Image (tube, rainbow, N blue to C red; front, top):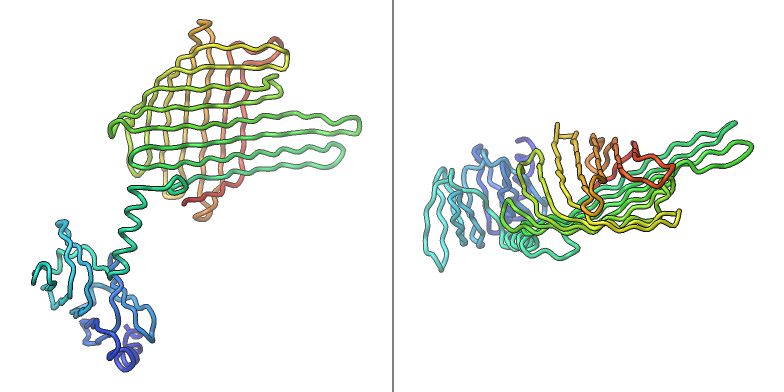
Length: 353
């Protein structure tokens, strides 16, 4: 409160004649300026000479605002006009509604005309977002390097971006792993895999959604030049809270595979899967996703995709992540194993728009 006492003479002396809004504190101090907004527990006032001042709302005894402000009551009523607050009684006067009284305890927010316009613009952005709006995601990067009698390097990168609205969701992902080893005699690539995909979900009801997706995959050591797997189906939002979500889905997919051996094959598949995210703490979250593709063209064969990751925030925009990714193919080309497991760890940079 000492800071407020020091500001009072300047605010009254220099701002009193130019600005119309007056805030009276419980200790008797009066501050003159322009009310910006009541933001939670604080009232923000702008003075021409002292700049922006933040006042504890519970220390405000009265307000007189001759310029029109917007007042939102907790019952959903929105009022606009000149404001007068004295003790526990609020009075709003406007040409449209006349004089309206309300209790101080019923005030949800107070906003200036400019603040209200900015708020409505942001709400409209969420209701009618552009395609470039509302994207959030992360980029992972990890590297390991050894130099000596043997030289080895391991580089892994991945990226994931989603755009979620109340109506639909777009998701894009990419993963890359490259590893090599070199001795005095020769150099050898030991891992080289690329995975990526795109998925679109449309909410049919608050719980049920339909989706379409396409996955692409390359794995040199599975001798897989390209796997192209478009899919379609239905899903359900089983659980969705601030702590995370759980979805399941079912549908059909087409699997088109091109191998380095010259083998090309196409098959129809069913699709059964689930997607789970849980925030263990404010800093740590766990994500797990499992999808099984039973082959309906060649019964008895199947594919399985499993991903498990955990990340812990170091700063708001950076985390440390651990990721386990398994791709199982029940009928690989001769001489190749069924399972390819990738384990990566490293920095995760997050972003949001």
